[in-house]
Image (cartoon, rainbow, N blue to C red; front, side, top):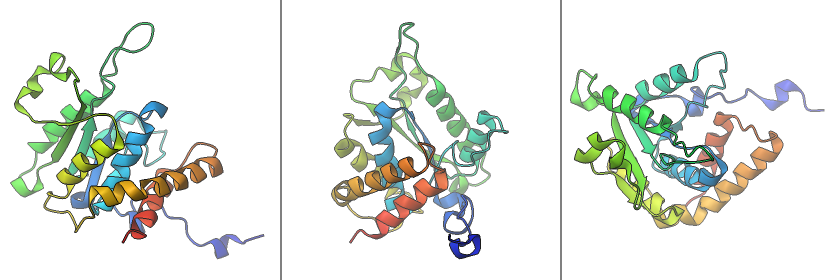
Length: 218
């Protein structure tokens, strides 16, 4: 049996390789359901490939703290955020929409104007599916230009990467084509982690997997 000492120190989110540097942190606000998973994977992996650390309300695993507090902490300690409004439509027998995503977008927009210096302002990207009627329920967004995509990873990856690559804190990036090509390797590693963890992958392990796979890119 392998001893605890031989296994080494476990990586925790916010420490070591996963240290949270605000200028390198991107809070991801999107659905977490199985239907959206391939797009979520593409956004997370693209973020890592552009030299940033993806963040989420799931990162701490702290169920003793209110989810809203975790979301606020993630947004306020990150310079960037990505918001997808895909699920703001009627669903289920009661035809109810989920408005968590617009709520979190509002927090990010407010955060932008709280910085003392322009260089410290929060910057955000809005993603919407083609044909999405988001202006019918958040008409105040009419003055902004969201990135539209058609629901495929081949469409969303270039949109996310073109935005991240032009942020002041981006590193030299690969092309979207290269990232899309290797994305299945990350998804395979994620599937292995899901099996090993019984479906509950720690956020640190997921991000570390994305980092390791991205390092194998040419």
